[in-house]
Length: 604
Image: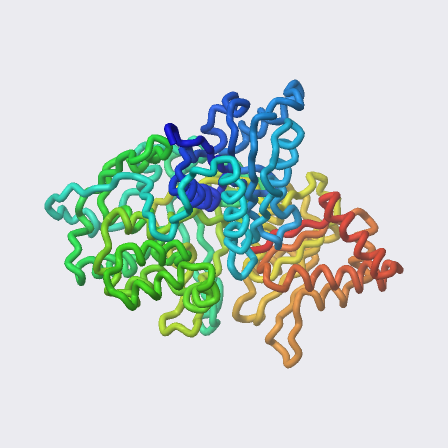
């Protein structure tokens, strides 16, 4: 071909997942022979869209079905009423939505984008792909077959494009090299190493980060309890003030543990790979359609990159094994990597990686002969980026005048069939923060929205750390002197009254002061387990009365079974038995409550 055909890949990403998916798609299009940028929708000159012939849009959904921050300007432009319905007649496109089916507005932003592109005259090459994080295979369950079909349709337009050799073709995003220098011991200084994203003066145009200092970090559960839950208080540095409301979330980017970082460099050392922690990293453009992020243009040591950029506890995708297969010179390991990276080896990949939660680091130990052939460019593609984590804020900004933020964090530590326990990256990093440590974070709206009228009844179901957004509301109402037990009803659940009853003194004090009505379900304090749904059934008459008085119902907590069990208790006992409706009528009423915003769920 005299000139490679053009295909743009645009993404709207809140936590970098959509960006990574878009970059994977871009790699495939590169292998096929296409040219064109991969970039955030808001970075793309949208007036050029009328000239484009082919595009793939990767769109995450955030908050209450909202579009991500780096898509807002793009979306606002598309919504202009003066755009004629023939604006995008030239464009042939596909939309991939990334969502989580545990939320009501599943893939809402992607669906809206798909509909609007249709309204403006664009032609979909195939229907929208709705990826679901809850699926066993994650997003790949939908993404892989969708992309395969999309690219096969493209071949009908360009019969001469190269066959898809993604399994055997390595496309690095950037040109990476090392500046070898003497070890200056920059990694062993006291406290945290400098933040590579914000501390060096770099600013993300889509993130308004603030520096905080840790002032409290203590365990709320009894020492004999199986789970460590932390109450962490962060205070803004200097005289900075932040504003937030109940239901908002705090975003923070965690770091890898010192043990994991040292483990990575021990792998390099074992195989005599000249990649040392004190070497400086140089990242340059390799393709004109894949720019280097601003923070990676700054001087960083490899230790900083390993600690803050590469997610060493991430679970390896099938693409990881295709990369290892390309560098491996060991016949047995190479064949196994090819198998694990193939569609036919998907079940083996599930059993080896996803189900036991095996990390990329552990894979490098298992495939040690292949790991001996690693290069810096390949390492850069092996690890996904550490993504920001979101936590419901567990305090009101009013008592501290906008200086403090409380987080109620369950430390993730559990066993699989693997010998070593699985440790959550963010929660364990937060647990280990010391008083005085400085971190960067930013506030975003959450999925829960509370009415301003303090007389409106609130039914809040928050087992475990699901208490966090409700504590924020209770503190605000108390500060405003509008906390009344008739309006504020909290159904809290945990295992033991004496072991994991978070914020017990605070809640019991509010009950004594007639500011709160509290229902507690302690599941393990008696032979028969009692959960929050049982408390709903026990108090169905009162709850029906509250619903009849226009109450808002909120669920916050673990997404596994609790939200469905709570919904079923409301349908069967509150809306049907007490409300005098058939089950079908009760389910219809629940959907109406959800649609009107009077039944909201924040689950994770």
